[in-house]
Length: 73
Image (cartoon, rainbow, N blue to C red; front, side, top):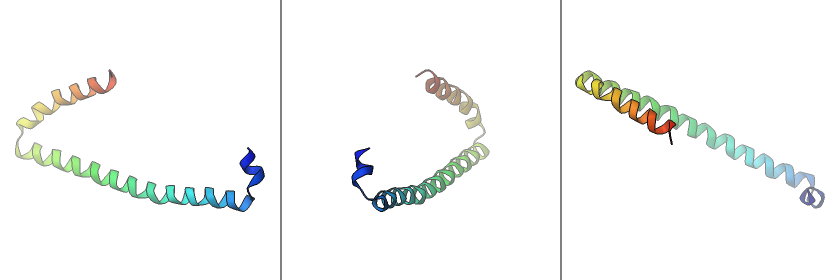
């Protein structure tokens, strides 16, 4: 609490304002990249599924194992 007593109000607000601005700018880019990557993964799985249907059979056990490992860790 001593920092708020010794630092002028403008400096404190400026620092928090700059931090929030950086978070807002980076968060937008990160979410955009995440959504783009998720769509690419779905497209790849669909393309593989359409060209080699046997892949679908192996996808279910792999998904079950992945789910089991993630929840029992």
